[in-house]
Length: 199
Image (cartoon, rainbow, N blue to C red; front, side, top):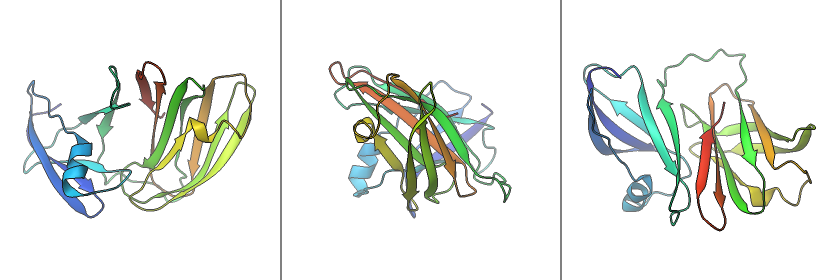
């Protein structure tokens, strides 16, 4: 969104992989298959960082369009997020939190992932689920550095009953870091997916 030429780097644990360059303004799109990069370099992780590096100006905002869903799906989900500056100030007394929707239905495979938004700190906190009446379930979350917490709808069916398919999750972290969440639901017959980031 501002004049610049940036190198795009995929950061996984302590390693960085150059995945291309892009110039702004311009109409080009840089497409990166993260799974192929991981496979090529023998990397097995559940989260990564994407960085834009410039010797001169850097865009005020760089958008990252995530494409998620079943590999065989004719229609995958697309989630747009903006990359952030990792020098963002976080007050020492601030607990991180995020919330969003979670679709619970046996005809859909729903996944929820939680990860540290700007630094690979891992996560520790509590994840709560609510229906229209109130809280229905909670889970303690404790994942190590460089990893994401991933929960499937199949993990929830035996723990509570609700007549409401649309649940809301609320995650509150014990750590002073920004939290990112994504929920993706895929129809088990059509394999069509939809998804969104947290609020």
